[in-house]
Amino acid sequence: MSFLNKVVSGLFRFIVSGFEQNNQTIKNELKKQSKKDLSDSDRDCLDDYENKLDEFEYVTQDLRNRKKAFDEKHRN
Image (cartoon, rainbow, N blue to C red):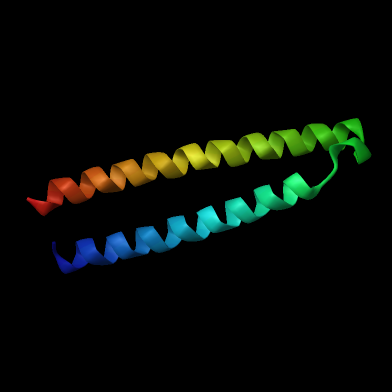
């Protein structure tokens, strides 16, 4: 693997792991919050935010798969 590929790979792992840690922290905090104490609009906003976090997890997994394919292609 070339030096540039190693740099890109390392940078990718750093970025994704940071996003995943932040995403998990936010999800844990959201679980602690009691939705029954929120207004309807706040509850809707929180639900939308949780949906965005789920979308982010999907995108992160897609990026991981693309990175794996990139590594496989350039390994040969």
